[in-house]
Image 1 (cartoon, helix red, strand yellow):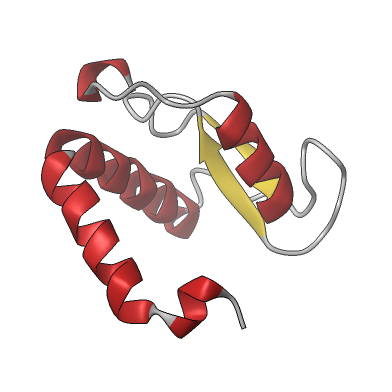
Image 2 (cartoon, rainbow, N blue to C red; image 1 turned 30 degrees about the vertical axis):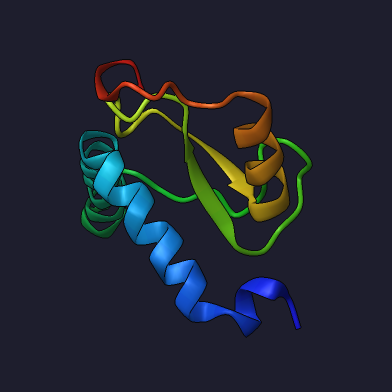
Length: 97
């Protein structure tokens, strides 16, 4: 069992503190996620079945480079998405995200 799984109350508290300190960034990110989901639902955007980075199939996620451009996404598997986010962190300022 991971630390996160065995300490859900601490994870919830840490996440809540981060969201309260980064409201603009959080709102911008949530808006971008909703726009992607709605665009997929309406058929305006289609989710890739394979990762753009490694070609793996399975659960593919929309990776945003800039939340201000919500439909500009890369389709990555979770491991590639995590590595990509770590290598190209988003700016802390909402307008620069």
